[in-house]
Length: 358
Image (tube, rainbow, N blue to C red; front, top):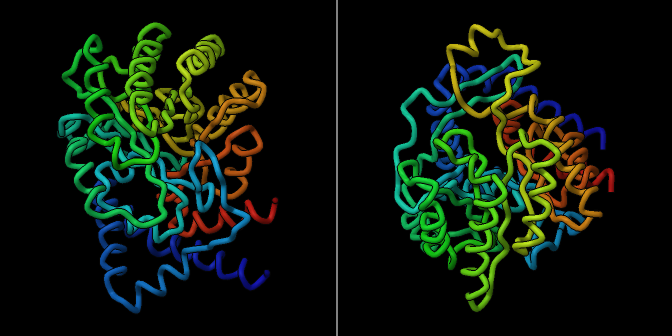
């Protein structure tokens, strides 16, 4: 046990002292491409492929979960936004994720917001992004999933509306993306909580959200084998709005929620205000969101009498953070920003931590 902990410690130290400083010399989007691309190339070398997969993967039947009629090899997932177009499923699966959420995918491909649109806040172990749903479109994603997908990996499809689609026509966009991806994903996530698409969060209001989810559920139930639909919500909702979410989930019959997306708040940050002002608008993720995301999970879980299915995400950078979300009421968890600051070994460390506490 002590030897294992020592190896994990050395791996973390190597990433934080040697690798991360080099990666942080590059703009965030470029560093993302370099890191995933390099690991992808490594996996193409037979000897290194076997080593990498054996090092990062950690399988144990006690980690397996069954939710939503799906079998998850473990409860640790990759959050949407990391692999928007499904290009890195096999690469990221090699790190030992139990499920990967692709997207956000829109019915028509779009470039997203102008660069720079992704910013690091090292003093807060956080990111600010205003990517703007940059993606190649649901049809291209569907084609890629049809051609190649790791066996046994649960894949979720996160869908949204195009930037130029007015809210009055948003349902049409979500329906198109749903139809295009339906044969190729295991569950859906309706994203109405990103702060980076104009007026998108207005769809979280009770009337338009009920109409949107009800329409998608009607479309879903018309299928031979309907698939779970989840709603991704913002951490900025107040208790009354969270109560509305609970009512809408019950009324529409969707499978549950993902709590939470990024926040527009900039309170209690260590990063200087002057630098934040130069960055401008965008969604904040990472450690500053951790506490609020957990509060939202706990509130929804308790108010639902423990009946609501929740995937917890927001500020998870250790096994302790993941367990905090699970103890608050999350059945599964997702990570993203934590990978940037803690390195690829984070997935394995979280899984070991969950086992040690089970």
